[in-house]
Image 1 (cartoon, helix red, strand yellow):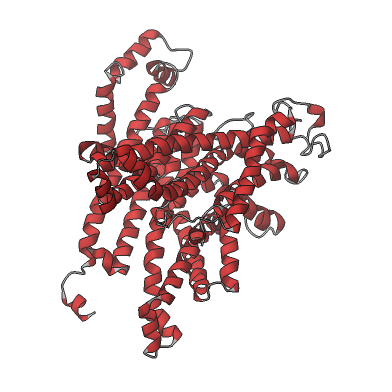
Image 2 (tube, rainbow over the protein chains, first blue to last red):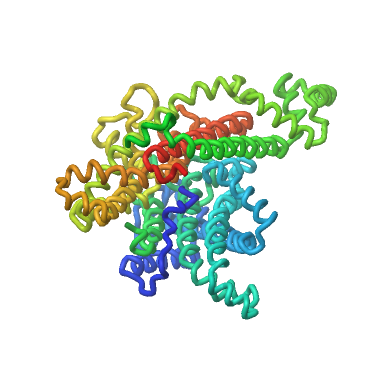
Length: 278
Length: 325
């Protein structure tokens, strides 16, 4: 939900060579969830919208490990499609925020002048509102759509990459080793690749973790309160609010999307380098 | 201390001046952004706007193209969109937020009614979180690696992986359904504010606890703290005189970052708990595509965000003299 990761959390850390145990656990956890999202819909092989009304709220069985939901749809199939939807949105919006954000940040630090001022003003405008409000306003244009969510989240996220990359690159570009590389005649591409990227990558990866978590959260939160994707889309937040009335009779039904969301966010938290996790 | 009281003005005010100017600029940006987005929202709604308004006035069966044309000319809907956008901004500048298309009440009246509950909820949540988070953080930071430190770390990680809308559900299940001690939703009695406020507060405290803990660990390792102990102060005295202020500085400035979480959380938590505040109204306005209400509520939430930020800036300048530059 906190779509803008805090600058305070972006700790200036030497890149850790070895992964600690928590990070390994996080990678394993996210790997399993990623595989489930990637192959789950195909492995389950059942249409998540197919209703068998006579089987509503049926208990889990070997053939249908999570049973059926309130409308007689296979829960595992819906969960797998929901996972795929959430991770796709998060991955897409992180990439389409990180790539332009980083490039524009580099450009602003390198060129300075009016492009930097224009970009900085635009970034300030986006940051003036909390990210979720911006996403809400954009999603009000076409309620229930996937694209406004994607555009809104990417728009809210790119600013952080821009600001962090610009601030860090400015300092790096003025440093003696970059100056030496310039005097030796190396071009911008070489300097960015060899001198800037190694310093920027740890910060970028922190931003990406936060951005990914923020995107997954924003989508499910909006689905949950009814202004995100609309039923019958198998989206995690939509599923939770739909299955909430049945928590007494079939707790595993609402438990499944809740657990999936929780584990995704938990896995992302585990990925943090030790100092930051504290 | 003597030097500072000798000057007529508290030097804190100088730094605050520039910070507040920036916040004013941010407030203007919020208005511009929300206003422009909402203007285009009205333009992009399906159907012809003149017909829609005429239908609202005369009823759907009575609309003729002549009536729609009259409305179009009367409201200036035939003007180019840039002129209309300028007009929209001018009305926003005069604090004319229009009329809700659902309740037919002026948006300002609706918002005046909803602002109180939202402010009360946010302040109570902030108060709870500051009571729990930094206190536990300082205690945990006194013994890094101790039982309390490890326990608060575990709770904080779990709370951070639990979105506020799910945390709210868990609290409702425990306190309303199982124990039956607190109302689950609504706005009838005082108890109904406890669960939404607690939901927000736990989310905030989960992070501020760790920030305070790290600050405390840093203070304990610092030279000035060691010196305070060496010159014979007790742990308690050293903590009160030299420790807490230095823990408070990063904790309060981190509060500025947490305001994003607070304002976003207010929207979600109010909706879940049916708390009659501005966030709840915003979600419902989006439901019913009531653009004047969307604009009004988003604007007020955005301005509230800016105002809280300004308060945090002020508090920071008073606590940390280094930020008064």
